[in-house]
Figure 1 (cartoon, protein in one colour):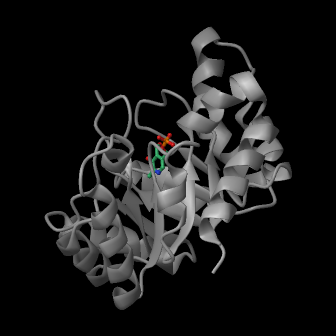
Figure 2: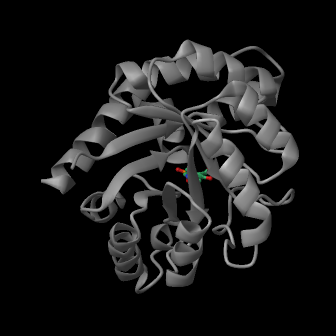
Length: 237
Ligand code: PXP
Protein backbone atom coordinates (compact mmCIF):
# COMPACT_ATOMS: atom_id res chain seq x y z
CA UNK A 1 0.00 0.00 0.00
CA UNK A 2 1.31 3.42 -0.85
CA UNK A 3 1.76 6.11 1.74
CA UNK A 4 0.48 9.58 0.91
CA UNK A 5 1.85 12.89 2.16
CA UNK A 6 -0.61 15.65 3.00
CA UNK A 7 1.09 19.00 3.44
CA UNK A 8 -0.51 21.39 5.91
CA UNK A 9 -0.05 24.99 4.76
CA UNK A 10 -1.59 26.73 7.81
CA UNK A 11 1.67 28.32 8.83
CA UNK A 12 2.17 29.98 5.48
CA UNK A 13 -0.97 31.87 6.47
CA UNK A 14 0.46 32.46 9.96
CA UNK A 15 3.41 34.25 8.38
CA UNK A 16 1.18 36.21 6.01
CA UNK A 17 -1.05 37.34 8.86
CA UNK A 18 1.92 38.41 10.99
CA UNK A 19 2.36 41.43 8.72
CA UNK A 20 -1.17 41.85 7.44
CA UNK A 21 0.09 41.53 3.88
CA UNK A 22 -1.16 39.30 1.06
CA UNK A 23 1.99 37.17 1.03
CA UNK A 24 3.15 34.47 1.49
CA UNK A 25 0.07 32.95 -0.14
CA UNK A 26 -1.10 29.56 1.19
CA UNK A 27 -2.53 28.66 -2.23
CA UNK A 28 0.81 29.28 -3.90
CA UNK A 29 2.44 27.09 -1.24
CA UNK A 30 -0.17 24.38 -1.79
CA UNK A 31 0.44 24.35 -5.53
CA UNK A 32 4.19 24.30 -5.04
CA UNK A 33 3.93 21.42 -2.55
CA UNK A 34 1.79 19.45 -5.00
CA UNK A 35 4.22 20.11 -7.84
CA UNK A 36 6.98 18.74 -5.59
CA UNK A 37 5.09 15.54 -4.83
CA UNK A 38 2.53 16.22 -2.08
CA UNK A 39 -0.48 13.96 -2.48
CA UNK A 40 -2.91 16.35 -0.85
CA UNK A 41 -3.22 19.59 1.08
CA UNK A 42 -4.50 20.12 4.60
CA UNK A 43 -5.81 23.37 6.07
CA UNK A 44 -7.33 24.06 9.48
CA UNK A 45 -9.86 26.86 9.76
CA UNK A 46 -9.75 27.71 13.44
CA UNK A 47 -12.53 29.43 15.28
CA UNK A 48 -10.25 32.45 15.89
CA UNK A 49 -9.01 32.48 12.23
CA UNK A 50 -5.45 32.84 13.48
CA UNK A 51 -4.00 31.46 10.22
CA UNK A 52 -6.32 30.13 7.52
CA UNK A 53 -9.24 32.45 6.72
CA UNK A 54 -12.60 31.61 5.21
CA UNK A 55 -11.55 32.96 1.81
CA UNK A 56 -8.43 30.72 1.85
CA UNK A 57 -10.62 27.64 2.19
CA UNK A 58 -12.47 28.42 -1.03
CA UNK A 59 -9.39 29.61 -2.91
CA UNK A 60 -7.38 26.50 -2.01
CA UNK A 61 -10.36 24.26 -2.74
CA UNK A 62 -10.70 25.71 -6.25
CA UNK A 63 -7.01 26.14 -6.93
CA UNK A 64 -5.54 22.68 -6.42
CA UNK A 65 -5.89 19.44 -8.33
CA UNK A 66 -5.21 17.09 -5.41
CA UNK A 67 -7.46 16.21 -2.48
CA UNK A 68 -8.16 18.87 0.14
CA UNK A 69 -8.38 17.76 3.77
CA UNK A 70 -10.26 20.35 5.84
CA UNK A 71 -9.52 20.28 9.56
CA UNK A 72 -12.36 21.60 11.65
CA UNK A 73 -13.81 21.69 15.13
CA UNK A 74 -17.15 19.94 15.59
CA UNK A 75 -19.25 23.10 15.45
CA UNK A 76 -22.27 24.10 13.39
CA UNK A 77 -20.33 27.03 11.93
CA UNK A 78 -17.55 24.75 10.64
CA UNK A 79 -19.98 22.13 9.44
CA UNK A 80 -21.75 24.72 7.30
CA UNK A 81 -18.47 25.99 5.85
CA UNK A 82 -17.40 22.42 5.05
CA UNK A 83 -20.69 21.68 3.32
CA UNK A 84 -20.28 24.81 1.22
CA UNK A 85 -16.61 24.27 0.38
CA UNK A 86 -16.97 20.51 -0.21
CA UNK A 87 -13.41 19.35 0.53
CA UNK A 88 -12.54 15.73 -0.21
CA UNK A 89 -12.20 14.98 3.48
CA UNK A 90 -12.89 16.64 6.81
CA UNK A 91 -10.73 15.86 9.80
CA UNK A 92 -12.55 16.70 13.01
CA UNK A 93 -10.17 17.96 15.68
CA UNK A 94 -10.59 19.21 19.23
CA UNK A 95 -10.01 22.93 19.48
CA UNK A 96 -9.23 25.14 22.42
CA UNK A 97 -8.91 28.87 21.95
CA UNK A 98 -5.80 29.19 24.10
CA UNK A 99 -3.81 26.27 22.69
CA UNK A 100 -0.88 26.95 20.35
CA UNK A 101 -1.63 23.79 18.37
CA UNK A 102 -3.98 20.80 18.55
CA UNK A 103 -2.77 19.44 21.86
CA UNK A 104 -4.49 16.10 22.12
CA UNK A 105 -6.90 13.87 20.30
CA UNK A 106 -10.64 14.18 20.12
CA UNK A 107 -12.51 12.47 22.96
CA UNK A 108 -14.88 10.50 20.74
CA UNK A 109 -15.96 8.26 23.62
CA UNK A 110 -17.52 11.07 25.62
CA UNK A 111 -18.73 13.09 22.62
CA UNK A 112 -20.31 10.32 20.55
CA UNK A 113 -23.77 11.81 20.65
CA UNK A 114 -22.73 15.25 19.44
CA UNK A 115 -20.27 13.94 16.84
CA UNK A 116 -22.49 11.30 15.26
CA UNK A 117 -24.84 13.74 13.41
CA UNK A 118 -21.90 15.84 12.17
CA UNK A 119 -20.19 12.75 10.78
CA UNK A 120 -23.46 11.70 9.16
CA UNK A 121 -24.07 15.12 7.55
CA UNK A 122 -20.59 15.24 6.06
CA UNK A 123 -20.71 11.66 4.81
CA UNK A 124 -24.15 12.20 3.33
CA UNK A 125 -22.68 15.10 1.34
CA UNK A 126 -19.98 12.78 -0.02
CA UNK A 127 -17.16 14.08 2.19
CA UNK A 128 -14.91 11.48 3.81
CA UNK A 129 -14.70 11.93 7.57
CA UNK A 130 -11.59 11.55 9.65
CA UNK A 131 -11.36 11.85 13.45
CA UNK A 132 -8.11 13.01 15.03
CA UNK A 133 -7.61 10.78 18.05
CA UNK A 134 -4.98 9.55 20.45
CA UNK A 135 -3.98 5.92 19.84
CA UNK A 136 -6.37 4.49 22.44
CA UNK A 137 -8.43 1.35 21.79
CA UNK A 138 -11.66 2.84 23.19
CA UNK A 139 -11.36 5.93 20.96
CA UNK A 140 -10.89 3.74 17.90
CA UNK A 141 -13.94 1.64 18.71
CA UNK A 142 -16.05 4.75 19.29
CA UNK A 143 -14.82 6.26 16.00
CA UNK A 144 -15.92 3.19 14.08
CA UNK A 145 -19.23 3.12 15.91
CA UNK A 146 -20.17 6.66 14.92
CA UNK A 147 -19.39 5.97 11.27
CA UNK A 148 -16.01 7.62 10.62
CA UNK A 149 -14.20 6.54 7.46
CA UNK A 150 -10.76 7.38 8.78
CA UNK A 151 -8.92 8.03 12.01
CA UNK A 152 -5.83 10.19 12.14
CA UNK A 153 -3.61 9.05 14.99
CA UNK A 154 -2.04 11.88 16.99
CA UNK A 155 1.74 11.47 16.87
CA UNK A 156 2.49 14.44 19.12
CA UNK A 157 3.51 12.36 22.14
CA UNK A 158 5.68 10.14 19.89
CA UNK A 159 7.28 13.32 18.53
CA UNK A 160 8.17 14.25 22.10
CA UNK A 161 9.80 10.81 22.53
CA UNK A 162 7.26 9.55 25.05
CA UNK A 163 8.31 5.97 25.96
CA UNK A 164 6.02 3.28 24.58
CA UNK A 165 4.28 5.63 22.18
CA UNK A 166 5.49 3.96 18.98
CA UNK A 167 4.13 0.60 20.19
CA UNK A 168 0.78 2.26 21.00
CA UNK A 169 0.62 3.77 17.51
CA UNK A 170 1.50 0.43 15.89
CA UNK A 171 -1.20 -1.35 17.89
CA UNK A 172 -3.76 1.34 17.06
CA UNK A 173 -2.94 1.04 13.36
CA UNK A 174 -3.52 -2.71 13.52
CA UNK A 175 -6.82 -2.08 15.29
CA UNK A 176 -7.83 0.25 12.42
CA UNK A 177 -7.61 -2.67 10.02
CA UNK A 178 -9.79 -4.82 12.25
CA UNK A 179 -12.36 -2.00 12.51
CA UNK A 180 -12.16 -1.18 8.78
CA UNK A 181 -10.99 2.35 9.48
CA UNK A 182 -8.47 3.96 7.15
CA UNK A 183 -5.45 4.92 9.22
CA UNK A 184 -3.68 8.28 8.96
CA UNK A 185 -1.17 9.86 11.32
CA UNK A 186 0.21 13.27 12.04
CA UNK A 187 1.46 16.00 14.35
CA UNK A 188 5.02 16.87 15.23
CA UNK A 189 6.57 14.79 12.46
CA UNK A 190 9.89 15.84 10.94
CA UNK A 191 12.85 14.45 8.98
CA UNK A 192 14.32 12.85 12.11
CA UNK A 193 11.24 11.01 13.37
CA UNK A 194 9.10 10.26 10.31
CA UNK A 195 10.59 6.85 9.44
CA UNK A 196 9.14 4.73 12.28
CA UNK A 197 5.65 6.11 11.59
CA UNK A 198 5.99 5.76 7.81
CA UNK A 199 7.00 2.14 8.26
CA UNK A 200 3.74 1.19 10.01
CA UNK A 201 2.11 -0.78 7.17
CA UNK A 202 -1.51 0.17 7.94
CA UNK A 203 -0.82 3.93 7.86
CA UNK A 204 -1.94 5.33 4.51
CA UNK A 205 -1.40 9.06 4.93
CA UNK A 206 0.78 11.39 6.96
CA UNK A 207 -0.22 15.00 7.48
CA UNK A 208 2.73 17.25 8.18
CA UNK A 209 2.75 21.01 8.54
CA UNK A 210 4.90 22.99 10.95
CA UNK A 211 8.20 21.28 10.23
CA UNK A 212 7.78 21.39 6.45
CA UNK A 213 6.95 25.09 6.40
CA UNK A 214 9.68 25.92 8.93
CA UNK A 215 12.37 23.94 7.08
CA UNK A 216 11.27 25.51 3.81
CA UNK A 217 12.73 28.80 5.08
CA UNK A 218 16.17 27.23 4.81
CA UNK A 219 15.84 24.67 2.02
CA UNK A 220 12.88 25.84 -0.06
CA UNK A 221 9.47 24.20 -0.05
CA UNK A 222 9.96 21.87 -3.06
CA UNK A 223 13.18 20.43 -1.66
CA UNK A 224 11.63 19.81 1.76
CA UNK A 225 8.54 18.11 0.31
CA UNK A 226 10.73 15.96 -1.94
CA UNK A 227 12.98 14.94 0.93
CA UNK A 228 10.03 14.13 3.20
CA UNK A 229 8.49 11.94 0.53
CA UNK A 230 11.80 10.22 -0.10
CA UNK A 231 12.18 9.46 3.62
CA UNK A 232 8.62 8.13 3.75
CA UNK A 233 9.14 5.92 0.72
CA UNK A 234 12.46 4.61 1.99
CA UNK A 235 10.88 3.73 5.35
CA UNK A 236 8.04 1.96 3.61
CA UNK A 237 10.27 -0.40 1.62
N1 PXP B 1 -2.89 16.53 11.74
C1 PXP B 1 -3.75 17.28 12.47
C2 PXP B 1 -5.11 16.75 12.70
C3 PXP B 1 -3.38 18.54 12.99
O1 PXP B 1 -4.25 19.25 13.72
C4 PXP B 1 -2.09 19.01 12.71
C5 PXP B 1 -1.68 20.37 13.22
O2 PXP B 1 -2.42 21.35 12.62
C6 PXP B 1 -1.24 18.23 11.92
C7 PXP B 1 -1.65 16.98 11.48
C8 PXP B 1 0.13 18.68 11.54
O3 PXP B 1 0.92 18.83 12.66
P1 PXP B 1 2.32 19.56 12.52
O4 PXP B 1 2.03 20.96 12.13
O5 PXP B 1 2.92 19.43 13.88
O6 PXP B 1 3.08 18.82 11.45
